[in-house]
Length: 249
Image (cartoon, rainbow, N blue to C red; front, side):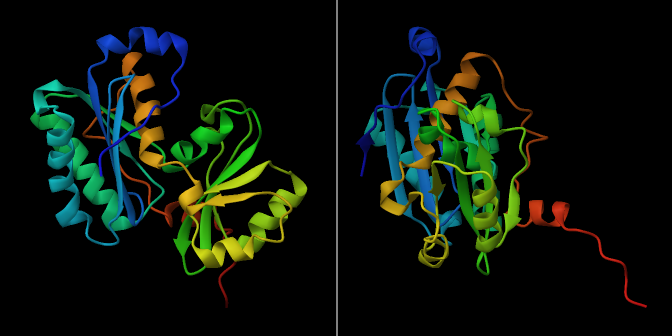
């Protein structure tokens, strides 16, 4: 289904949006795939449960979205893509498609962290929140965003932990809500927290935030090197933050 979606853009970006052209945004970081076309004013969005079929479903869905919106490849001026944390297959598919469109059509590419996009609709209200994605086996990857804009959390490294470890962190430093793509067991594990757990249908389509954040960067000519852009998998932060133990004798 093609759904017009009015994203929130800063006033100065709105005034310059006419020069930004159309951006293609791709989100395959989870089992819910998302695509968007955004020109700074209008956004056409599609989201659907893709599970593990990103390889066969996402590219045809891009062409279908372009056709339904009446937009041609020549109208695209940039591509934004979710960089993770996320699933291995999903991120590889999304990244490959984004780089293919960028290189094949001489377009700049912008990588948007999944947790930053997840946090974006909520941090704009000015309250600290935690954005979450499931990491499998009952674990989750999460990141705290403190300020009035999702950019304020970029310098804080995501953590891969158990729900209990997240609960203990929130008890020490309260937040207004936990938001994101949470499985029912993870939601249940966090219910003891006296704050909203906003997930599933209650959460705005993440690809809309990827489009808005990517478009803001595009207007500033803040692009990524397509050759160097790499995905971040859900288990990457866990390996980086694990405590080294002394080897057993």
